[in-house]
Amino acid sequence: MDVSKLQKGEFIAIGGGVLLLIGLLLNWYATKGLGEINGEQGAMTGWEVHTIIRWLLLAAAVAPLILAYIILRDHALSWPRGELTAVIAIACFGLIFYNGLVARPGTSNSLTSLELGWFVALLGTILMLSGSALRSSNVERKRKPPGTL
Image (cartoon, rainbow, N blue to C red; front, side, top):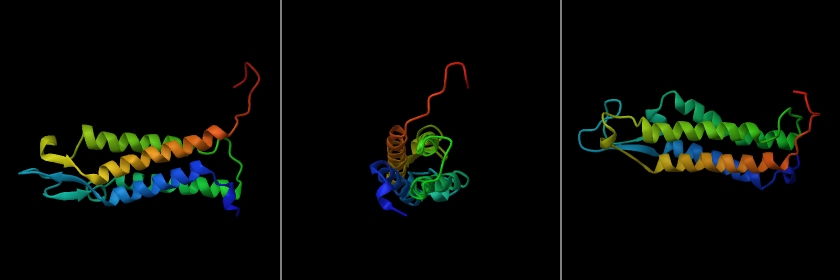
């Protein structure tokens, strides 16, 4: 495997995946006063609070590594390389953004504050998106004749 096949976009996306994984293990939420999340008070990680989404985010954090593996092994794909990783990053951004700002866990949104881990995970998805978008923009799509699908 020739590591020189990897470009700047892959390294940015891998860094974003690592940040997403680190952010998932850092504190996302902290309760104030009488606020509770799942019956507990204090600071909690995204891994502790989101029992289903944590597995989706963990799988998404691995996506840039799979992209790098595909590029290193020179596998043939029916879509531009990096495109699926970009879609995964957009979906993760939406999940994290929604769960942090719209449907924040806890007894009340005003009693639950966002912590560093939420911001790190959000930054990780942005880096994953930008890195994979850089890769997919370097691949030229085959043009089809007019009138064909």
